[in-house]
Every structure is written in structure tokens, then in C-alpha cells.
Image (tube, rainbow, N blue to C red; front, side, top):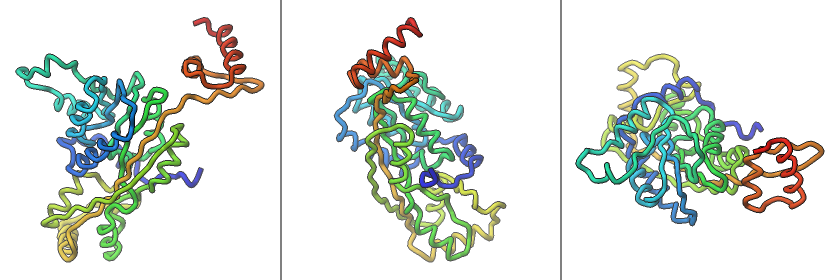
Length: 308
């Protein structure tokens, strides 16, 4: 499906970024997570379990807000890198004198999900992976049937001021391309999700100095484009960049995309020869979906072939 091709991202550079230690979540990520958390007011479903997908960069303050919103829900933290998992465990550690240490069960930190949950929460991660379809497949697998996904990422208008400046200086692009929200919606459907809902807003940050602007950018991510400058930049180039930034308004625009979608029950189709997993059949029968004659026929086949 050519129209669903993701932005061209250097997979090795994306891997290095994912394994780079992070001490705290960027301010922008925390703010986006706070706004996405407010969107949970639209969803009536109260998950009994949920997965916080890579909160070390995605937002620790949001983790606290979500725990307050769903105090009885079982939470699991997923960090794909060993460094991220270690940082998450350190951040979760409470002093021995705090009552919460004894009253609340410890939050597990894992590098892969074993049991599906009813909500997956992923903030500002999708635009930094080289294989977004692969990540969506992991989200889908981590969700129980009728569970829902909440995610955010950056869109095409992100860093438009810096993009314009680099073009004027005839430099390679300062960042990889970002995907439009409609394409993300198509990819979600292709990954097996249902009823994707997408919306977008723009956030503009202003800075006092060029140095502060670049510092904020380094905390948010890296240029993962395969067309980025191949060598090392020198001090003279860095000084040139600072001078060019100082000649224009010190502001950066970020297009923030929010999305949510559900994992629907598996569709059952019976033809001349059909193979249906036992788990999918049980989930469908429990919900009373599908044509009755198909259900009874498939159930009979399972009874003969798999005597569970």
C-alpha cells in the first residue's frame, strides 16, 4: 500500500535514540500528555488494566495523573530498552517512610507485554520509530478485545521555522519528515484497529536565546532523516547556526496529533476451509457476535480438533 509509506527514517539512528539514556521527560511531552489525559473524559470505558508505553520520555507527571484517574486499575510500564527500564524502576522507587510504599502494590516494569490490557497509553513516541507499523502491531497485541489505544505524536508542520531557515541556508533538512494524521489513521485500520479518531493542534514555544532553543530541541529528539548531513559539524557551523537563529523570532511550532482507536473482536468468516484460533472463537462466542450457524459449526470443529 504505497500511500501508507511512513517517513524515511534511518533505522540505526532511531535505535541509537531509543537506547540513549533519558533523565527526565521534556516539558513539551509533559504538556502534551496532560492535554491527552484530558481527552479521556470523552471515553466512558474505565479500564481495569493499562500499559504506560515508555513513560521515561513520554511523561512522568502524566503517569501520576493517570494513576489518580484510574486508582484501582492495574498498571504495567513498558520500556523497550534496558536503560529505560532501569530509569523507570528508579523513578518509581519511593522512600521507605512513605505509606504508599506499603499500601500500593509495586508497578511492574517490563520490556515486553505478556498479558493484554484494556488501555495502551503512548505519548510522543510514534514519530521517532523507523517501523511505525511494527509499533502499531505491538500496541494491538498488548490490547485485549474492546480495549483502546491513546497516543500522540508530531505532525508535518512541526519545526516549520527551522525548516524554512535550513532551506534558505541550503542545508539538508533539520529533521525527518513527519506523517499526516490521516495517514496515521489509515495505518491504524491496516494494523487491525477500529474507529480511529484523530485530531490536531499547534503549540508554539518561544525562547530567550538561540542556545536555549537548541537545548530544548536536543531533549525532544534527533534528526533521524536518511538525508541528514553525513559528517560532523564544526564550531564554525554551530556559530553560523546561532547567528542565523538570532536574526529571526526565536520560536518553534509543533503540530501535535492525538489519536485513539479500539481493538475490535476478530472477524469470523467460514468458507470451504477456515482456520480460526480458539482464543478468537471464545472471545466472539462470549460476545454473541457472528452468525449462529457459523458459530455452532466452528465450535464443533474445535471440539473435535482441540479437546481443551
